[in-house]
Image (cartoon, rainbow, N blue to C red; front, side, top):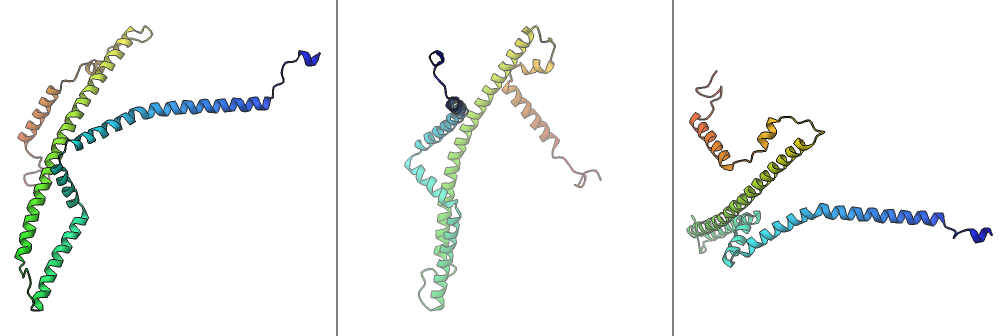
Length: 221
């Protein structure tokens, strides 16, 4: 009778192990979902920046790519070492040939070497300037993008402050009070007005001239 009335026998040990496995799986799912949400915006930003650089590289022509490679090679210490070895080797070969009464292809003061160095300096300077002009245009583009993002962020922050102030005024449990700072932050920022203020401050600084220290001529003792 007892055996007939009793239900199926449960193993408490296996049940606890099953519960622990379910709890561990749930925590892994939560951790995975939280990690995906955490890494999602960051990964999107990384991909956007990568696409920006890829687009810039695709817009470069073959000549520009060659100039970029030359400019990058010139900017490395290896180029300085190779140039120094070339100049020293050139001079040593010609000086040794001169002392051995042999025919040197560029006797001192090495006019051919000076011509080579001058021509190389001209081409390398032009290459570096071309690369700097391209980087300057890219910096202007990035500065414009950063300015637009900052303006949008400021507009969003202003809107959030405005909504919070409206919510605070509508809640009966919150004491309504006048906050001058919040009233000022609710107003949208005018970039032109800020630029005018910056230009005016710079103009006043230029009119005032450099500050004179106590130890400089004309300063207080």
